[in-house]
Image (cartoon, rainbow, N blue to C red; front, side, top):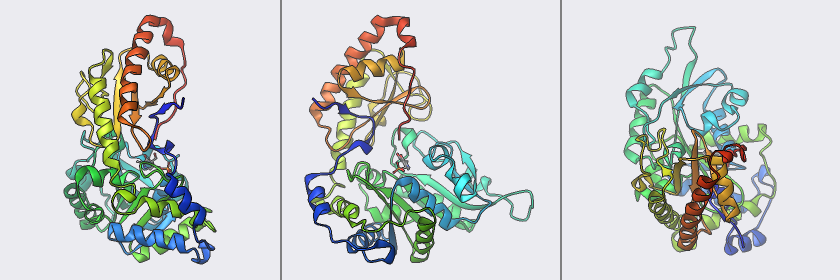
Length: 378
Ligand SMILES: Cc1ncc(COP(=O)(O)O)c(C=O)c1O
């Protein structure tokens, strides 16, 4: 039997419809702008998010990187949440490749940052000691707050602060459509205040590869040059873009509406886990108050919690029962629902968790030495 793999929504496999579209895709050399399927995907993404143009890139990390390169000059600074993926989980690409420093601010449990602190974080350009602030960035959904969707209103207020200081706002929307579905807003409304947005096709939208960056025509031209610099100019890449076009279809033919099922499954999982002895709240910003896991915190497809006993032993005991979850920072465990996970899988996961915790308890302190390895989860 296949494992119930809740490590990430990146483990999703393309749908039969995607595989068909990939096999039949019309292709051309995309570096010459000749790939009609890539062009169609970029136009569709731009149209959906209400921007002038789009750019297909290999990954969310590359999307964030080319966006930073397009917005910033070397030596400039980014204001962003302390736990944003582009701050802590992209191998310091902002420093290594872009040449930018980061002024990071603590996030709140709803995934936002304090706007007064943002305003305060801008540098004084007349002081030669200081780097010049060139970008404000945020994440939506915000992963480390248990995947909270960040509202249109907050995005607009953050954009206003950025724009008052003459800098753009970039949204790392790796799970942008999860936020759209959870908030019940139009993609263009949520993207509206931002100058650039990147979203992943390869997560809950279930495509095998790729992300799209959207913004103004000018910005996308600079991002395209940055993509070439990084070696990300691909050729007959319509075979990959074809899956993205299927994912972005309206209604049940696409993958956007379907995300609501992942959110319902995540809530069902949290409700079940909350009653399991040995499962407690995740701590940190995901649910800062210690105690029972609060299923009300689950707004999208992330469930984050802690176990009272040895985490590594728990994850191993769970894996031997065919359920995979991952270690997440701050001693947490993360489970992510996605395409291919059913309510029955969720119920089986709750039962397996109960058994794995009981086994971990029986092993007692001996378990403390088992399976020290942790896997980074994204
Ligand atoms: C919030 C966020 N941004 C960016 C990325 C990077 O995406 P990729 O793995 O496609 O590079 C991830 C990946 O998990 C993510 O969670």
